[in-house]
Length: 74
Picture 1 (cartoon, one colour):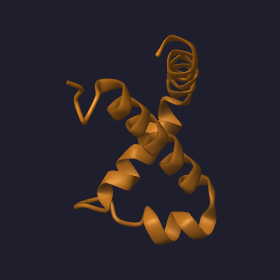
Picture 2 (spheres, rainbow, N blue to C red; picture 1 turned 90 degrees about the horizontal axis):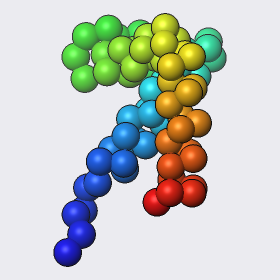
Picture 3 (spheres, helix red, strand yellow; picture 1 turned 30 degrees about the horizontal axis):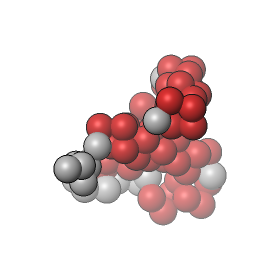
Picture 4 (cartoon, rainbow, N blue to C red; picture 1 turned 90 degrees about the vertical axis):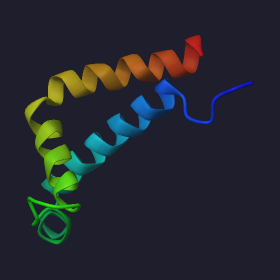
């Protein structure tokens, strides 16, 4: 029996979410529309964007490692 939610799927989703929010922070229209709130439910997007921009090197390395894992090992 397999699990519906796997750890590698959750990690891939988290990495894609952080990368997407960091990209949204660079686009002016999306920044004002999506990242204006810093608290509450919408604050999750802002916090993910901050993580993506401050730890961009670590996020990039993790994305490459996860892509290698998904393509070749899994």
